[in-house]
Amino acid sequence: MDLQLNGKNILITGGSKGIGKAIAQAFLAEGANVGIAARDREILQLAKEELGGNVTIFQADISKAAERESLIQAFTQTQGGLDVLVNNAGGSNGAGATETEMALFYEAMELNYFSAVHLSKLAVEQMKQTGSGSIINITSVFGRESGGKVTYNNAKSALISFTKSLADEVIPYGIRVNSVAPGSILHETGNWKKRLEANPEEINAFVKNEIPAGRFGTPEEIANVVAFLASTKASWIIGASMNVDGGQSRMNF
Image (cartoon, rainbow, N blue to C red; front, side, top):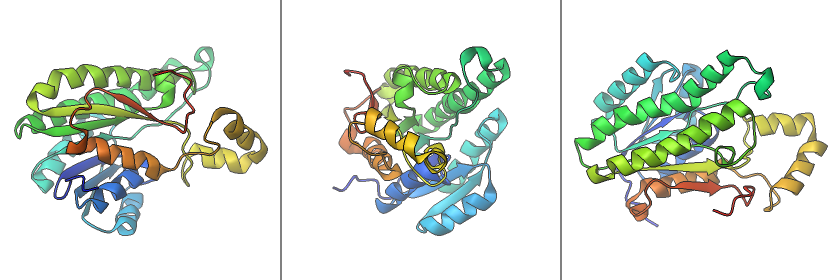
């Protein structure tokens, strides 16, 4: 299927590894111009070499507001515009709610929520100029229902809510906003890989008991959905939160 993304300018945060890198690869396969942003320049450079194609790297710590502003400015100046923003960067911290220091709650919200809110607002300013665009927020099934670490769950829930609010506000300008909620995804740099290596019996039991499909998902399976949502083939999908989880979520909708 031709997703009509050839020549589109795509910015992906957390794009140097894991799900973000797979998303970059999916857009490159469609002929898009891809920018990947992350904190570590060496890992960014390695990702660029591995991805090949038309990839531009941007070193930025998106937990800092000034660097978010610089990132959008640098990307639009380099690429000449912004068609698709994928807010993929994120991470979890802390433990139970009563055991987790407040500083970690603030840190989790800055990385997982406020960064995406701010980048989305900056992207909307650019996209309004062309009357089109797509913003896709990578959330989690544990933002749609209880599960995972409390700081991560809270931040991803907030991001899903923000996605719907922003989507309704900006669709009159031709800008679509949606979110993708992955389930448990296995990749080389992720927590599931580390946990599987440390305790294979426990993690294999988790897969058997919690994921109806009977296996972990792959980054490519998330990336394929993101590329579709960014395309005109998904023109009537607005403000949605889409589970991509092998049946892991327990929700009915």
